[in-house]
Length: 144
Picture 1 (tube, helix red, strand yellow):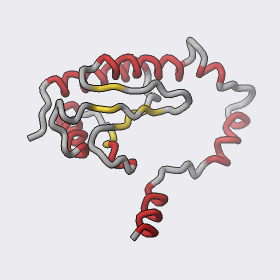
Picture 2 (spheres, rainbow, N blue to C red):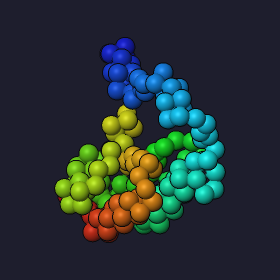
Picture 3 (cartoon, rainbow, N blue to C red):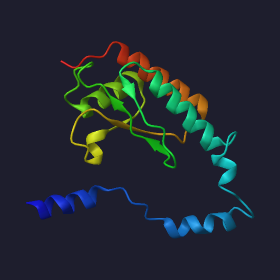
């Protein structure tokens, strides 16, 4: 049984199959490009990450460690506060109500229904809109 579970876990990991293509992007786009332009203060990825982190931590019952290099966050939600026993149901309820997609933590082999995953790649105004919708959703949410 442990062997099969290990294989299933490896199969469910999201690995990037296009790494060789990523090395060719700089040349394909025509010239010098530096990641530091994106990840330093004022850079797009830096600002998106910081704004998402601020907004997530402003939501009562939700907390998150600021990512250092990832393009996603894995916030913790107070499952007892919202009576969440099925994180997939919470994500689906949010999708149906607000038309914004999150991914439940259990999709990443997290054993408890108290985390979800969001990406920080959208523009800041999209992040602000989506997270304001999530805050509004949670303000009245309680699983039965």
